[in-house]
Image 1 (cartoon, rainbow, N blue to C red):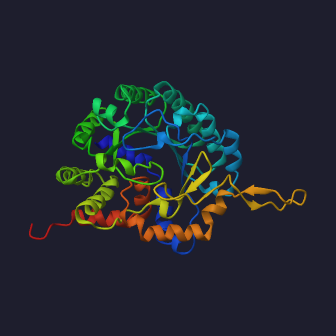
Image 2 (tube, rainbow, N blue to C red):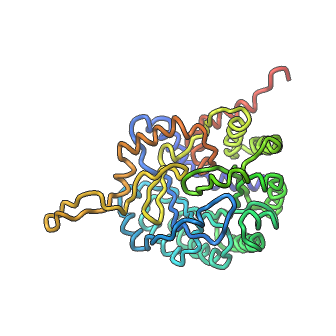
Length: 388
């Protein structure tokens, strides 16, 4: 436990946290914050058939090439990005993944953290890409992080991912990444989506990861029209009344901080209050203030749980070129991000959908940047109970 705490302290970006406290508590009231957090979904193709997600059923459309991304990222909007998450689909299905990462690193001069989210199925490709990516990140002083999806031990994970032998492949992938850590410095963790089918297996998974010194994060299944597009799966995945007590007890365990750096305990306390007591969400989220998503089709989102706010490859803006006055050019991401109608939409979400959102995406980042809510949470837990 002590080594884990020290590791978190060593990885903490104190300057970024200090700036975040200023941004989230002062600067955002003075004007629109530039984006600091970016997620790029480099593909929607996937080699899994997950029960909680229909991404793998998306239509097959041409994806942006390395050159396409290189051109698009010349937009000044990307100059302020310091945290990048690469997701999908499954990013490792792109044979040019390492080349894409090199472009991302070149085009985002302030980048300090790069995270790859993977299902761990293409073991050799993921290990090879990770070794190459961390070698690109290290001289640039960019921390590399890998989060591997894992929803249970053994057959339960295979059923959740609808891939025979999936657990064995993920186990080999994690072991290979642990071996790579002996020669390359990067963070490795696993992430589990809690649904009704795997709810009663989460403690077993937690123990399995603890025995292998693998940090494990959890996300309660969400149901959305966009991105995962899984509204048709609700009846089989959502929790019924008989599950609630077990779910609440596990959430209570996650809501008990094991160290002052365990900021996600605040999120889990918040989720417990939402699910059990019907309270509104209070956990801050970068999607509300300084984050956005770009995908391989050029679609732009503030949050993947909501509708897109534009497409940076669509030709909607007239071109002022006198030689070809009838031509048009693609709308830059900066114009989409700062568009008044989009900012108004984001503000509306903060007052409505955000209050009911259970997403843990970037919650740790938001908590550290806001900080006052987490400090108050820790203070209340340390105060003696009345009558004790």
